Amino acid sequence: MHPIIRVISYLVVAAGLALGGCEALFVGIAILTLALLGTRSRDLLAACRGVWALRWLWCSVFSVYLAFTPGNRILRGWAVPSFEGVNEGLERVASLALIVVYVGWLVRATGREELVGGLYAIARGVGISRRIAARLAVRTLLVLEAVPRVRATLARSWAERTGARDLVPALASLLSLAVQEGVVATPSTVRIAVSSALPPRQWLYPAVLATLFMAVQMPL
Image 1: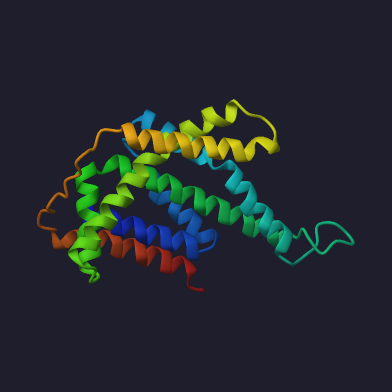
Image 2: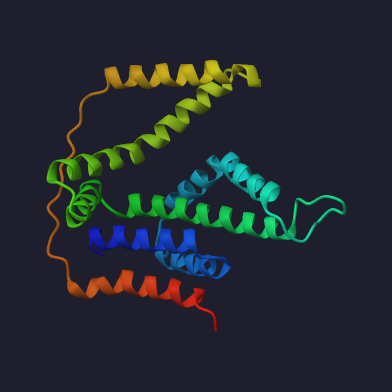
């Protein structure tokens, strides 16, 4: 699949999951299952680790829905939590977790230079200047590549400190280590690959995905 189509398909799926409900969630799971066919178990395990690493974010999102969504009460005498809050919270957490897995699949299934080239081509296609599009594509890729290193550094720093009072020193240590790593790191070159001709028939992939998400949201 062409890198541009891969990135656009991801954006379509992410938008469908973010805007859709339970039906869109099932469509996303089916698409993800097809995308992961033939994926190495190591890559699949890495994607699962990424979801687990964000477990506190999932808990926070679920807690917000639980605390601020009115509806049918679960506990007598208490306005919240409600059954609607539990349902919507679980749907949102599952959707966000799927989006995270999709990001991992996109980064692993697309070569570094191809991904940068795809992001650059899309940015240019929507009218962004060449210079800004190049910076946007390269910085997006560098952020995605830096996340595992930052996560490992934060885990090591946090393991040395326990307790809520040590949160600020742990974050300060993380910032210091990040600055030191940036100083000693060897500059790397990121080449923006010139995308090959895009076969017109591949536009069917994002079109079909968009149609699926819109179809499941339409009332019968």
